Image (tube, rainbow, N blue to C red; front, top):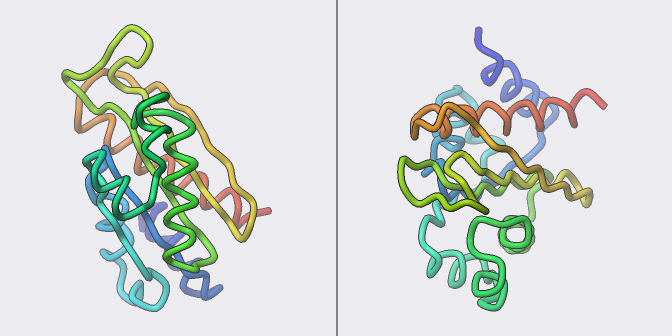
Length: 157
């Protein structure tokens, strides 16, 4: 039994609802959740907000945030999380934005830079990661793994 399965089963047992807004992971967190039988009891909403337009329209991320800080930023991740929380009304909300590569990175925002936001009840945290090796699927899978680590840490508090 893998760790994600155990964490999702914990969420089901505690009846903790969850919603996700994913960019660079393209729905992998939602796929991991829905791979578990019974997850429909807790998984209330999954959005893939891959484009800037979808972040603006679906999550109501203020345009000034994307213009000033970029879509891959702590500020955008937080705005995504708040937008998702307003829509979902779930106990747990997760937002992810990053650069999975192999292109798209810069000196200031290299490939592998990922922000993961977690809002548990009303406690909001934004985590910054720089994953390597700089391979797209590795970065995406490591991002998903971190999401479940963060959720598990909250469940064990």
